[in-house]
Amino acid sequence: MKFSIQSRNDSQSNELKELAKNYLQDFGLILDEVEPDIVISIGGDGTLLHAFHNHVKRLDKVAFVGIHTGHLGFYADWKPSELEKLVLCIAKNQYKVVEYPLLEVNVCNHTEISSYLALNEATIKSPNVTLVMDVFLNDRHFERFRGDGLCISTPSGSTAYNKALGGAIIHPTLQAIQVTEMASINNRVFRTIGSSLVLPAHHTCKLKPVKNQTFTMTIDHLQLDHNELDYIIFKVAKEKVRFARFRPFPFWERVHDSFIASE
Ligand code: NAP
Image (cartoon, rainbow, N blue to C red; front, side, top):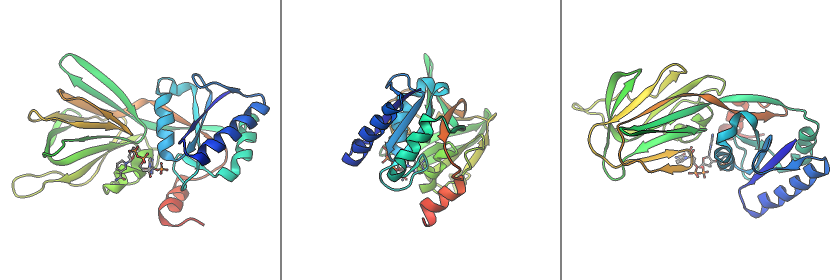
């Protein structure tokens, strides 16, 4: 089996990376940064986002697992003290793979379509001025949004930026995406729904700029530069992200331990 290790690059994560690499090689596993079967991310959830985007072109061939060197994460849920146990499970192939849904983003202008996959979310904002976008659900006009921006998240990303915006936490086995507002303008003239919208896999959300504006778009930690666009379409992707699961750690327990209290 081939593995690669993504580190957050602080000293603790780098030390663990060296240790993990040596243990795995002692068990006969091969270090392959380009075509690994398993990617071990050491750092935080943010580190796993980087690992995901490094391997986004071969998601069907790779499984991810995360060790947290800071606080407990959603993608990084192994403790550094559990490294030996984790290495043993990997070496003996004692894990199952769970698949979570992703967000597909298609940015269209008259000449081309650029497609992206997000593990957490995509956001669209308009720096300094109000973002004005027509929102279409399944190609039917739904509302004209005015405000700071919109966040379209995956179920596993619902605990990240989406949560900070007041969106719902969605269980990652649900094939869905969530559209959440950032500071919408609501008064006697302008109106938006105000609540987050959860769309199933066969639905689409389309955003169409109303006037010529400069946009800032993000896909997870990546910033995109699309100044000219006709519309953007968001939907549940056909691709999935695969996580290596070595023991049960139910999602709601992770939510509890991350946001309420850890034992
Ligand atoms: P980052 O430092 O990598 O991430 C920002 C924070 O979000 C970190 O504490 C990170 O956890 C946490 N996080 C990432 N994915 C998460 C998930 N699925 N569930 C719960 N927490 C999660 O910052 P960045 O380089 O800008 O990374 C982009 C991510 O940051 C985005 O995908 C977005 O979700 C998040 N973000 C959050 C806010 C907000 O909450 N107001 C604003 C902007 C961006 P770790 O410490 O474990 O890495």
